[in-house]
Image (cartoon, rainbow, N blue to C red; front, side, top):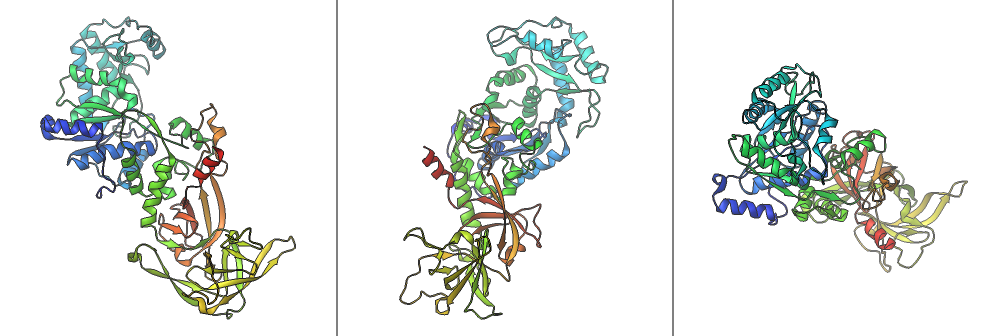
Amino acid sequence: MSKRETPAAKNFIRQIIDEDLERGLNDGRVATRFPPEPNGCLHIGHVKSMCLNFGIAYDYGGTCNLRFDDTNPDAESPEYVAAIKDDVQWLGYEWTNLRFASDYFEELYGFAEELIRKGKAYVCDLNAEQIREYRGTLTEPGRDSPYRERSVEENLDLFRRMRAGEFTDGSRVLRAKIDMASPNINLRDPTLYRIRKGASHHQTGETWAIYPMYDFTHTLSDALEGITHSLCTLEFEDHRPLYDWFLDNIDVPSRPRQYEFGRLNLEYMVLSKRRLTELVEQGIVDGWDDPRMPTIAGIRRRGFPPEALRDFCARIGVTKSDGMVEMAMLENSVREALDAAAPRAMAVLNPLKVVIENYPEGERESLTAANHPKDDSFGERTVTFTREVYIDRDDFMEVPPNKKYKRLSLGGEVRLRNGYVIRCDEAIRDDNGEITELRCSYDPATLGANPEGRKVKGVIHWVSAEDGVPATIRLYDRLFNVPNPGADGDWKRDLNPDSLVTVEGVVEPSLARAEPGARFQFEREGYFCVDPHDSTPERPVFNRTITLRDTWEKISQREG
């Protein structure tokens, strides 16, 4: 990872690590891990966890493993493994070790037999519905399974036969023997292993007929890898007593500690995997990498730079409670990153032809334009000026609405960016009364100079009609039009009908040759990137990453 853009603020986790180091715990080591399950696409909520785990390892000179929690063969695939690895590296991080929970299946099985031999685990024949019934409720204690007092020998025999594939799915499970009256339901004899006979695992094939459960696997994988600080979101706080129980009752090579932090909830987004799946399967969005999706794949395709996400996570910090973060915070990080890194270019999204009648026909003039107004290292480019150009239709009004109007009007003047001052002399209409063309004149003395005796207030962008390249431009916006979608129970009703508007525009010729994913500021329009899937030099496609200013703030103020 490159040097941190925004210094990491001290938080309670870093304070814990500092204290551990001062006390000489863990031999002065700091070891974290990022443990996604390869059963879907990562989203922006995972970015916070990545930045925390990899960032701590980076700042403390420690290690961070990328470990796939691959204990559910029915839902996982090597395609998700590859996508997650790509996401981590795109965000700017490198793992110390690449691990899979399945790497430890043999060791985990041995730990399970250890619990059985100690009388702390048993094979239970209750089905899933019966186990739920016996577990009790938050206010009522659970009941012991009728199979809880099986002998060690019988449990070992049954468990080994489970591994050998003698029993059908759901017929038996291995459970820890803890306390069915515990106020913490997670300690009421949780399941450690279930049967998945005939399942094909993307790493181990059909070697195993049984698979360990998450809590058991997660804890012992941490211990096997020598993780010092196991960082989880708050929903795992109630699981920590079980995490510690495994470590107390199994002979493990190291003693990690679990700490919980508040998860990321972001306005105008849903991060529930179930709801995201509905968006995809019902065709509300165009796949998991739709630029409106909060998935990392969608964020990347939209043009968000990774440094903006790292900066955003540094700004929101790490707390012990869940909270809602304003979308404006993320967008501000994106704007700041792109303002510094995106070269400028001109694109007309809603073209209106302008004919400059006193400019010689057939003449072409090369004008110089800066690629970045704040950074000379971006250099300059050449734009071609011709007799016919396109301007944006929104930059013309026959009659100005007020004296503050700074665009082109009938009889008025405006400067073309990096070019001349033009005056509109006539507006041409079609049979329906729509303006189709403007007849203008230019002042040849105004290239790089102000006209004598008059003040021209406005500057608008343009593209040569002869050299401009037709382009499809997708104007993406927030997928939902309320900060907390579904607050009234119907989250689909909160979908923003204008989250995608597609227009056919015209861009500078150089933009047609831009690499997939390249980011630009279209002057006066916003930040855009070349779509990595659909764009071609013959027909470029650009995705709007973000507007130049927060237009939603004005809407919120108006509605408030």
